[in-house]
Length: 152
Ligand SMILES: [Zn+2]
Image (tube, rainbow, N blue to C red; front, side, top):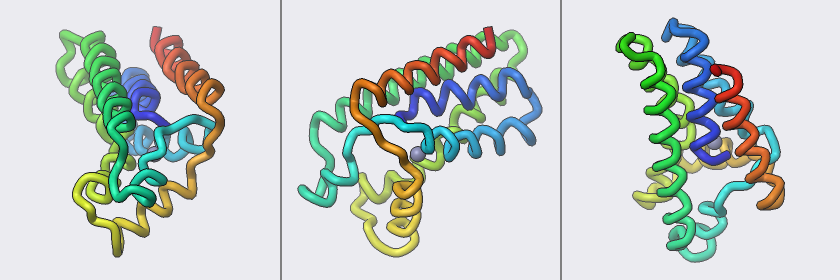
């Protein structure tokens, strides 16, 4: 799944559950559950296998996703202000919600494609349930909308 829905769900969890000892494990767990919902992802892995690196389009798509994720995370966290502690927990949960994907970046960005990192990338990939672009993007927009609805 893209990072934006992961962040929206992680931030929503911490909005509802301000205790970081509960919110952060739930945010991490939500990542693996969301990846089981049929979605569309850019094909970083296939491109890496085929061309040795990800395409320019995928990089632009991923950077846009990161920008949207940051906007969602900081927006939801800002709603907790002036409670800085709660806002910090929301930002932390947003981060931990995407950590399972961030952990794959050495594979794609630093050419670390063997050993434990390869095993982890293969495992994370095995969890993905992919579908066609239009359906997969709609599902992810609905996940983001549901997160905002939950905390509204
Ligand atoms: Zn993932």
